Amino acid sequence: MSVIKIKSNQRVKLAEIDPEDTGGLEKQAAKGILAKNIERLAELQEVLYAEGKHALLVVLQAMDAGGKDGTIRSIMSGVNPQGVSVTSFKAPTAEELAHDFLWRVHKPVPPRGMIGIFNRSHYEDVLVVRVKNLVPKAIWQPRYDHINNFEQLLVDSGVTILKFYLHISKEEQKKRLQSRLDQPEKHWKFNPADLGERERWDDYMQAFEDVFEKCSTKTAPWYIIPANKKWYRNVLISETIIKTLESLDMKFPEPAADLDKIVLK
Ligand code: ATP
Ligand code: MG
Image (cartoon, rainbow, N blue to C red; front, side, top):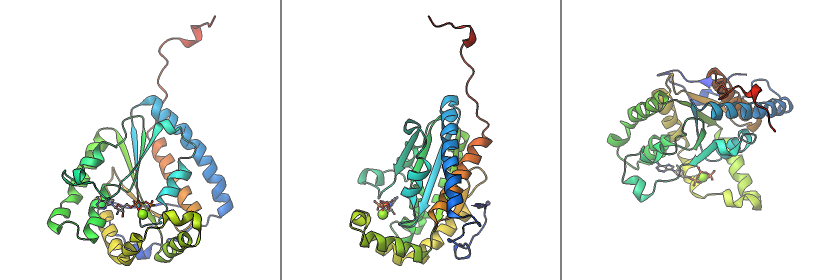
């Protein structure tokens, strides 16, 4: 079982990465691992908060029905809600469009001590914007460099960045969209506009491949997560977050005084 971590300037072909992959893991075993990971993540979040030296930013990108919401719901189910913020990036407002594309992104970056999750992100500005020609190439082309510089600024300020692409197949997307049509309690999730994005599937794959090549850096890497199987996706992402937080070697702060001399009356 291993995640696919993109090296700097590495060109990947998404068509060559199997979204069905389960790394030989069985669903039952995966559920056990995930339960443990959820507990471990809660411990690590507490020390992240207590120590207050680092922030963690998790970026999630995927095609529609790729599982961004489900990932957040499942992986973060054990952590103290006060220590996590989730920001969903929708089509920009008129005010946001009147600023540079990173203006709306900078503020929700988590402060030290916090975990921040981006459900979509500044990468939309080189994905949907590029695929649908929302701005000319001369505008989106320099954005890869702007993104790398912006992320380096964050890293230099104590933010650890993990970027996950939830890789589902076009067939799996069809199944998931169909189930939104078939089940009345899922109708609210069905957005007819998603069908237009689905028609541009190949253009999106190319735009994603360019993102991975240009914006996976040593300090802010992209991970490709085979995501047709939700339970495998959850194990891979939770493990990657845990390993990353463990590598920060965080510690609870020293107590202010000799606590063992304090006697409560
Ligand atoms: P859900 O799972 O609820 O469908 P979602 O993330 O797809 O979640 P929506 O409100 O359906 O949320 O879609 C948000 C839309 O906003 C997406 O189509 C996305 O591409 C678009 N969007 C996000 N950022 C930008 C941007 N910078 N420019 C243009 N469109 C954007
Ligand atoms: Mg949507």
